[in-house]
Amino acid sequence: MNWTQLLSSKRLGLENQQQHRDDRTEFQRDYDRLIFSASFRRLQNKTQVFPLPGSIFVHNRLTHSLEVSSVGRSLGNDVSRLLLERHPELHDTHFTELGSIVSAACLAHDLGNPPFGHSGEKAIATFFSEGGGRWLQTYEDEETGDRLTPIQWNDMTHFEGNANAFRLLTHHFDGRRPGGFVMTYSTLASIVKYPFSSNLAGEHQKFGFFEAEREDYLRIARELGIPALPSPSGTVRHARFPLVYLVEAADDICYEIMDIEDAHKLRILSTADTHELLMAFFHPQRRDEIARHLSRLDVRDVNEQVVYLRSCAINCLEGECVRAFVDNEQSILDGRFEGSLIQHISDTPRRAYEQCIHNSFDHIYHSREVVDIELAGFRIITALTELMVEAVMHPHRAYSQLLLNRVSRQYQIHAPRLYDRLMAVLDYISGMTDVYALDLYRKLNGMSFPNI
Image 1 (cartoon, rainbow, N blue to C red):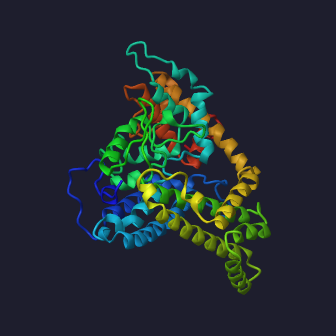
Image 2: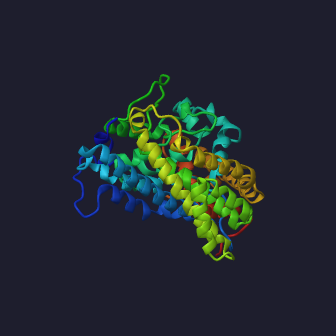
Image 3: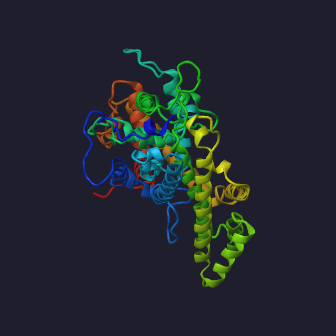
């Protein structure tokens, strides 16, 4: 891969149209288009890790995405600055826009997540693989012979927020222009963290695009020169687009460090444990500098102490990931780089990061508050998926008609193909906020009644 080809301002769906002429670059326009979208605004009512905030404010998907975007911009700008010293011939190319591209992609990286975080993803997938939707694997329409192909079935049983984000940005929903959000090729490629189709998804059910969007991804890969990798017949597998590593690093940095801060606010972690976890990122000399600064802060305000430590840890990890990217530039461009940037940083911060992960699994992700929201979310999403699938499979039933009348016209629930109807159900459910899904669940189960 080469940087000149990799960085393209061509837009999906507007390939032959002349670009706008104003003070914004095309990649800045991507960012603006995303931040003013309804899909982005809905993230404010979607769970990140902890239940949506009450009296204590913790992160939701929107605040998380904004923070990831901020860190992503720093990563892109720093990588651009350092690599331009190595490649001065790139000064007059889009290489100076790395920060804008990564920032926009970071803003979009969680758009496809359904309500209730990862439990929502799991609920959709297991409805088809273990639950009431299993019969659809062998269903065949008696009149048309229409049925799901093996790869379409994998899309259902491995439903994944990353693939759904790519669909949301590229799919031609009813009422939307071809190309979906009409994003630049480089921004779209930057969010495909797992550049292969669902029939290559492993135990952790990660893949980058649904069968419906396969051709869109292949068009982008061909245009940008992203090489295909060996894979079984009928499957798609490509090298990662280089900027994916920076988007992934920004996400890794923010969710792990900010979860520690949120856990401290909620008193799941003590101040002493939080200090210990965050101080571990630094060598002794730097720890002494930080300790001296903390001694000058108001000792009564422990939250401010944690905020300062958190900012130092993020700054440390950002610099380390920039160094890892720059040091491994060639292997990244060759498609030979393995793992994430976090796995290639210096020993001290890497061990500290791993300790944060272990602590999070032991004390945060398995805490009662988090497990309770996952249990509730799983039940709600499973129930809604079952009702909606039943409705699109039997649209002439009286209850089905009432239910389908609630669905926005942009979702193609009356599409002739079975696969498209089922994907429309998943579009509808994954686009819900936690609050909307809970409210709909209560109404459909007679637990609340609409105001008249």
